[in-house]
Length: 126
Length: 308
View 1 (cartoon, chains in turn green, purple):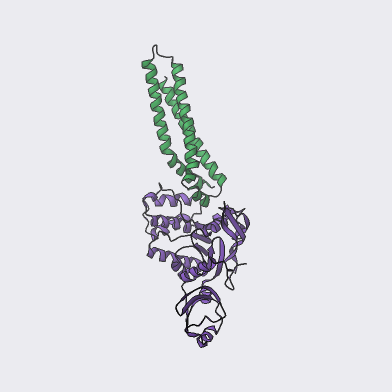
View 2 (cartoon, one colour):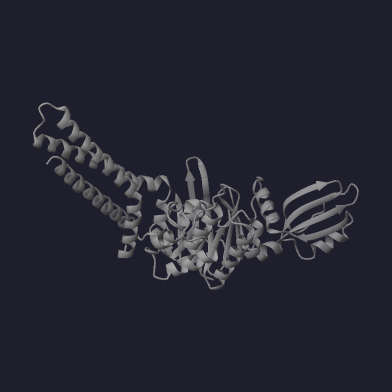
């Protein structure tokens, strides 16, 4: 697949993954805020900063793992479910290039999510 | 004439259902070739095997000199294929799907797609999900034709299109064939196909029951009506009867290859009061062949047909 094809495939996958990514980011940040607030307000005495950080990083990690599963389903299984894989099969130059393109985009978005969620966790845990 | 598609004793079975029973067929280049048959006759399976989207259980298929079993992707790069139910990304707009697909093809794809979409009157900013069935079919057609492929394979291309667009589209297929490219189409719209096809093949229950030039098929297959004298039986004549029915003194049959001079001889026969021969429309020929194929007798094949 040439650069044009890869860019357009990336654009398509970005459009497919965008709502999942945004939802997962929103839910995780909400959970991290909730955890952070409940640990600081409800626990007596308040826990150590390192313990809070571990919990918030853990939430980020679990949610990113869930995103990666959802992302894989959206990239591969949904394409089969909606029979659009045949459309790609008819136009794209090779299955290997398609899979590689999809995997690269899925991996990039997953890495992007974990990095941002860890930054949020670091901010919240001080 | 060079063949663009070759089927050699191709068979395919889905579970206990025999989809194709050893069909052998050669499709010449630069023609409009119509593949006809009732639902489940094996038309779509044959086309998908040719494109390497399905594998045959036995036999060999080649398209543009490439082996369908091993070089399916190379075939699909050179062939425009419109499936019976084209799947498109519903969330994309008409313009976006053209732009997206153009990424996998040459630089001429997008301008050509734009021309075709505009010609079909498709609104570029409308999401595909919001389009009618006919408009979606036009998007799919534009995508297939934008690549200007050497061979167009269209599975029920006109379903969902309104009459005017259907006629216009089929005429454009004749124009495509006039440029030396080949169009293979399967269709239920037999009367529409009749106006554009050069060759016709009829599939029935996975078997190829006839393949011939349309003109030759129409010339060889006619309706013979005999009004018999009281108490007389149908006299012997040179020709093959595909279907027949009797109503009172009138005997009517679809006959294949009625021998020269037979009509005059029948008119002079003592048992015949009147004899008439009339040409048939493709739809009537199609029905006659299917009716005949449903009977246990041997299936005829028209002379000079490009089948091995």
